[in-house]
Length: 374
Image 1 (tube, rainbow, N blue to C red):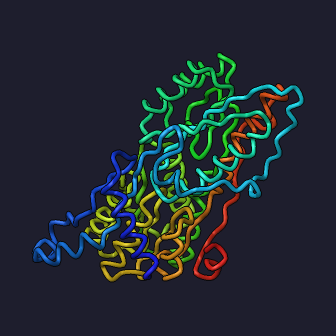
Image 2: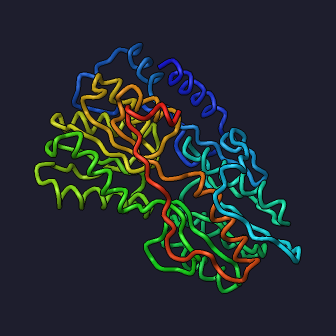
Image 3: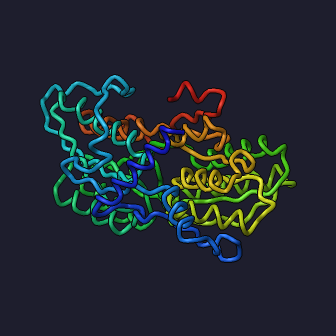
């Protein structure tokens, strides 16, 4: 517990210093209107605000600055894909687009930096380009800029169908585009997608929740952004699986937390207040830390089950304490590193080693095995 609160204190300090970021940096306040919490004294309100999670949504720069960038270091030993020999000494330039705004991204950026270090020995330069949100227009503009700069490879999240036309333009210009983490719903000319089987992951999360609840109860879904296809695939996977296999589990309509822990803190409190019979919450993306903290502050830790994704330090702390029942991994290091090496290899060999979907491994972390992940 001491470790978690020290992490929250540090996050709060970073949020004050941050200039821009993908998520909100405001400390959450409880917005519930029909409870006794609206009658809190100023002192108790200050205490609640200090307990709430704060997003560390710091924007990184192209030169690798920013809190998440600075906190990560290369680890070439973890790279699973082998680069082919660059016999002709061809210079290869790769643009690695990312949005390092939360704890999950430390592992992704570690993968990117590790591939950057690894590929430097093959006359390959990797430029890390940070974006400050998951807004499709910003990713469109960034890819367009990479076309102008004549990169050989672009690694990007398939954040929205709105980027498909510019991805097609990149492919027409001879640039290899690899998606990771999130794929677009619309077909486009990307070489491959490296990431979780997101719909299957949603179904898996539903099964884990049903196991926790003995296949009966009421559950809520806190999703990141309805506009992000990755989050939608998980959400629909959860809903479809619960509807098909578990008729005795009632599903409350999903709510959005803007992929923010501070927003999720408020959303979770409001969800529980409005649905006193709720027995479980599934988080599709960021927001799992805020949700867990909200339940702890409400004295409901372990009583309302949480199933979520990813294994950042604070998530593992909540798993260890029993506040989070289970979390599902998605191989963030590989999502960062593998598209870069696949792209480099395609440039050198003249053909892609992978096409379609390259799914990363899904591990389930519970209180029984969390020590292996810390």
